[in-house]
Length: 507
Image 1 (cartoon, rainbow, N blue to C red):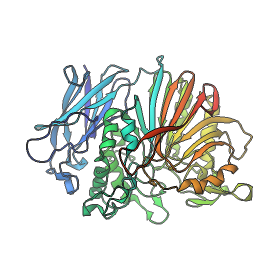
Image 2 (image 1 turned 90 degrees about the horizontal axis):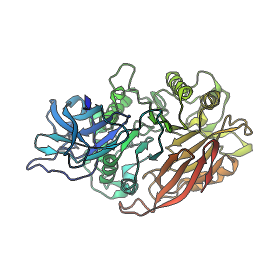
Image 3 (image 1 turned 120 degrees about the vertical axis):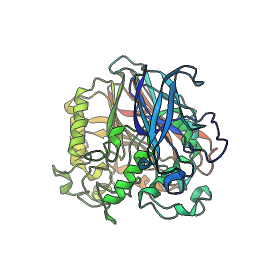
């Protein structure tokens, strides 16, 4: 029989039939979610919030018990485990249940009860046993979902896919105030959302707005997610506790990190009150087929030594003390490379690893918020792949609101150095709306970057991936518009990486 560590905060999820309360406001307005699966368990999440846009979310400031159940069938005839978890006011009455003791490599269904109300039903799954033969892995990765920039038709389509897992690579929310007219959505929103989030209560409302989207809820409810953050969960282009215009953002970051934890299906190390701060980098083993390392590229990084954003390269970025991940996370990552027996080693990165030379031989202009600002750290990463003879490194990346397919050289300062990995950079779910923004800007630069095998800057969507022994396939799933949640979707292009041959080929 399964057991659970009820860490009193996290969501569960799938969009299914809901029992509505007979009176009052329904407390499960943000749906359910699951995440961080292992071969024996998963995290289940929900949050009680009957009135999302008032302080406290409409709940009394006291802890309350929430009943959870996980079953083998959607009708809950065969309940495998159940229990009670505390929804705590200091964590916005969110609930995170760490279920363990489940059978590996199968789907499960879960739900919550609070008083007479029942949550939506969520579907999740456990991973195959570590190091055991495993046939395939199907996952999608996504990022950058500015609510005011458009609807989420990609999540509506994603929820219809046959996937094992979703990776979200950052910019789950954006830090700006919400326009009175709802921005691109032209949706009325409460006046309390006009100012940008500065404190914890306002950050909670920001997450509540985003998570109220029915298509986002459906994708959460359908699959377990692995989630990391990028910059907009706190402040644009920040590094550690610093941001170019705002200076020290420690207080803002602390509030933002807590709200992130309260609204994501993550495990106890991600709690903001743990000693040393929240740890969100983690590893998932999918049998002996794939190892997925999801990193935190914001919390520990150095202030970019050559300048914020677009700037010329400089020698200081090659200093041995300059880091993107922090040295403790680097050691964790490289020791995982050394120990890996997986056929495919997948790295989930919030920002692009490959070089993007802006001006060719005439200059040294780069974008320093990405790995280009930290070349010494990038070289340590690529050298670790080579030193440990890591099998088939593939990087999946968010951030750019654009799609790139990149060869990763061992050293981008030596273009003749070997290609050691492949990178797929996904576009945004909604950010930039339907505007043609980055195609005209980055398009002329591609000629200076022969390692970039594909670029598109003006479409919204996600990337669907299928992994088996022979190859890693990536389908670029694009929607026609984000002006409506019903927008059609199509595969814009497909690429494959063959086992033992770094670099993607277009199908």
